Length: 493
Image 1 (cartoon, one colour):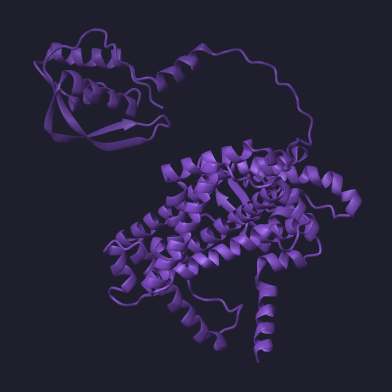
Image 2 (image 1 turned 180 degrees about the vertical axis):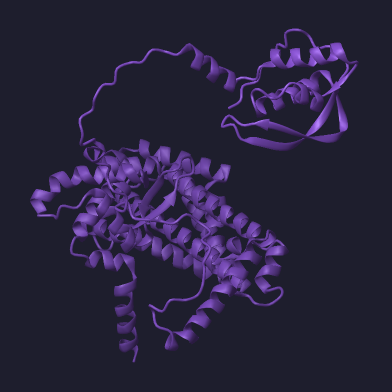
């Protein structure tokens, strides 16, 4: 049964685990080398267009040698995104998306690196590390005070003896071969950190998604998660992945610890044995602390951002609205499942659906413009210019502009005969020669120089086509003569 259970687990992992799936892929060598070259080194993330272009450049050289199909770099990257080898994330300082290796791709890349680098399976450094950690764990987990005290006294005696030997000058630095071996073991441990950070980030995002789903699915008035978020409990930071990240972040960013770490690395790189290391190994040692600080800070910022987003999701109306939408969708699916046995897929329903967004159509739907279709089939003839009729021009100008001098003269003529005159009386004595334009002109003059009356008056005018028009207009009273030249002219458009 144990073998059967492990076999079934292995079968499941073969299909689900991204690292295993990548290693089983037909073009695994292409994926690992291309992505490892551009995303597996010091630069772990690239804008999507930059990665597309770099993959295109690599394919120009690889395609004839490996008989690759005519697929662009963008096509390959989109396929690797769907297969889970790449992760797409928004850039913080631009609108472009960035691409980076997933946790499974990083583990597959580390496996390839272990195959490329020939190392002994058992080294003195690794064995010493294992023995030392087992001994420390045995002491730290011992509940007996006497046993633990005896172990500490033994350590103290060994340290005192070593101090005396150093004072006498009876010591030798670690030989170059063993120092180089230990340095490479340290680098092997450090190479696993990018995969660990990617896995922690994936776990934190998964926990955030799970918490949101629990908040939405909780049908009670107040769920446990909702109450805890309101009380200020940070589920992301209190999770196992969150605690591990916080501990690592606090340790690597502690000023005293990081300063000591930097000093120790600088001292190691000044030793004679460091000259026998590969240039890439020395560069990895030199940039180890900043790389770990940047990675931990980035994942910590992601966790902080998700925690704040979750809190806003709960404290605002988003959580309640998402729950209502979720319940409505669930009810719709339930109704659809009940109606499915009795309803045909192509049955027309008496239902009007109001879309809340613009319809999405394929880019192939619009047709290209053909200039030939707009050409005239007949022969284009040139018309002879006509002589300008000044009388017609004057008539058009008169129709487009209100003749304020004419209206002013009409009002002043009546005022000379009477003490006062209304707008209606002006129209009775001097019909609107410009139609509605004359009526509007009189109203403008009434607002400027007359006094508005509380009554309205029915007025009449003729349109440019000669038809009789009637309407109601506010009446105005003119009591003083208007200036001879009214400067304001208004165009009718």
